Length: 264
Image 1 (cartoon, rainbow, N blue to C red):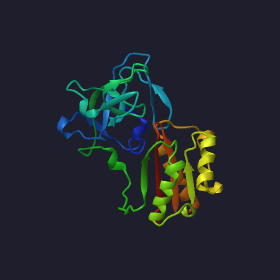
Image 2: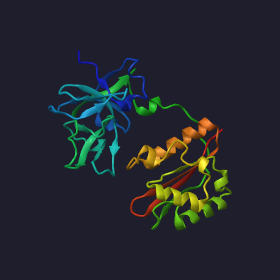
Image 3: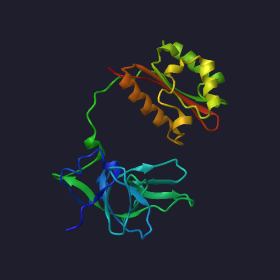
Image 4: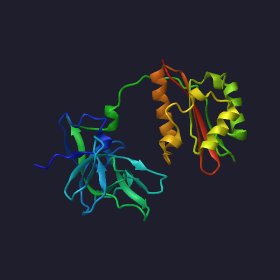
């Protein structure tokens, strides 16, 4: 009997730790993005670490069986890869420590080698394969009519100089204004840049970066938009707010901004 597979953190949304499952190989035609699969570690030590569902990092050992999900990693400096690139030999890599599995097609020479795996099968339950979307909570469709603006220009920040005026003009056109914003997440990058934006747009300071900004919490390279969006949505819910404004600067003279409305 094979050992019980190790659940990587990409499986934390599922009930795999509490309910039984089996795994067996499936024909390639039935593979899809988000499928939970089992891979056997084939790398020699020392091996990179993988992240468990509880957030703990563990070293992969040859022969370990791990559960991840088929996926795609694109547009990153470290690696580009896709499950569709897995060949008939079943060799794949853990494209992320969390367990995004696929075949690496472009890898930086300056990073730690990836965990190499051999495909051993798809997770099955009652004759059906298990996918990430099977464990997503059902939600109702909600109309989206809030303005979301992507600005490209010479400004360091989407809330600075000419870009700031463009945002205000667009908000007015949509029937909204800064005063309507219950919270504002401003990617400050530098303290002087944040102060410039606050002064130019006359932002209410008691609503800006209420839990700290990049100077206090760090600057998540490549994940700023996701971090600020998640932060403002949770804080809007906690405060029973309605509108939130997220702005961020982007390297190369680009900027982005979005208005989010909490559905009641």
